[in-house]
Image 1 (spheres, rainbow, N blue to C red):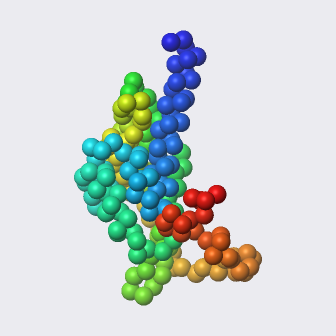
Image 2: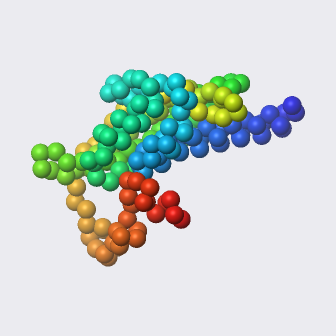
Image 3: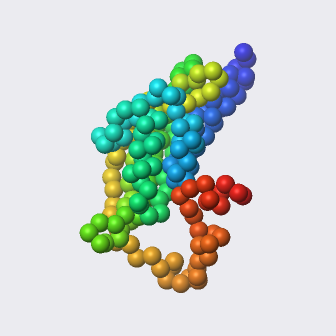
Length: 174
């Protein structure tokens, strides 16, 4: 393989890894367990900030059940650093998780800064996560005062334009 061919292959591999990381987040926010699982090898391990340490497929089921009563949420990936070594790779992804929560009758928004430390393996030509450790760096709980920019955005049509945590979300039909 020429130098340029190996560089192109590295770019393709890194893009496949990045898309796997993003696919998991989309599945989590849409409560699409099949999409979440598609990011993992069946024997993958997930260590989630000291709250869970076990099979990633089982984590997907547990996460959906745990998050179902929460309000709106979004998991966002910021910068991603990927190091390739043959059919293995290491990725460190900075991320933000937003969750609307309620406790003791008070609604608040929880914003979490985290990093995902992923070991990827390319099996049967496909990159998937073999082991993930979620590192929780910080969080901020903010009282919920949703006013849609104090009316700047007017009345928001949540029937057609509102997000949903299932496969009825507009993104599945766009």
